[in-house]
Image (cartoon, rainbow, N blue to C red; front, side):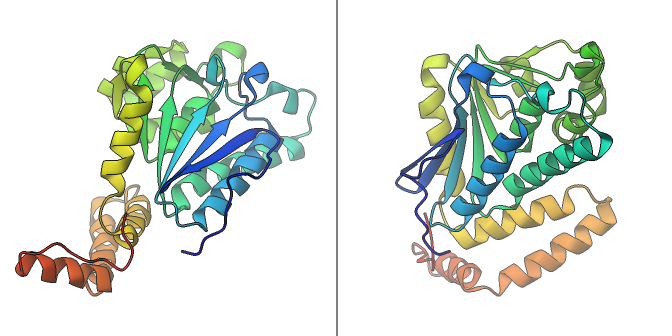
Length: 266
């Protein structure tokens, strides 16, 4: 990957900071409850693409203010035409896909309530840590607009019955329940949120950067397939990966009982 500095650039709705190998992207519209308005989604998509071109090995997605994200901005949909609303959700889908397409490991650091598309964004990240006081909900049905698109990501994390319980009742679940259901990796004491997030990301990014990037890409390519097709895709990915320099170095290091020297590593 080639270095393109993103820290220090001024963004309208986001803060971007780089600390060593990790870049933190922070939603920074607390007065709007970090709603995923159209311009916010466009900017967030571009920032992820910019970070993808840097030497960062991990990305932390965080938020400022009393709410992690309240989801879509209804102001974008009020009185809008079908064409405009389709465009809005195309942009949202592109943003979610971008999070999963970047080579870096992306972890959500959730300190408060994540609802609707905000919950979808957490579910879309590769990993997620939440403070024990955080909560998660997909309550669109209560307001007359069912959370169709958030369910795509949420159901792929928690399964059908639990996803539908969230969507049909609209009731929030606690961070502890979210961890039990698989929406997040861990719920931790509020005071430990930053440390726990950094620790998990550090463990998830150690070793070969190239191998992790290929692993992430391969996982999302096969996870939605039927098992026979998934094995075909995964076997081909593993075959191609096995002959890469980093894989061969890892194999040699194991056989020679030494520490590997990868071409690019955390």
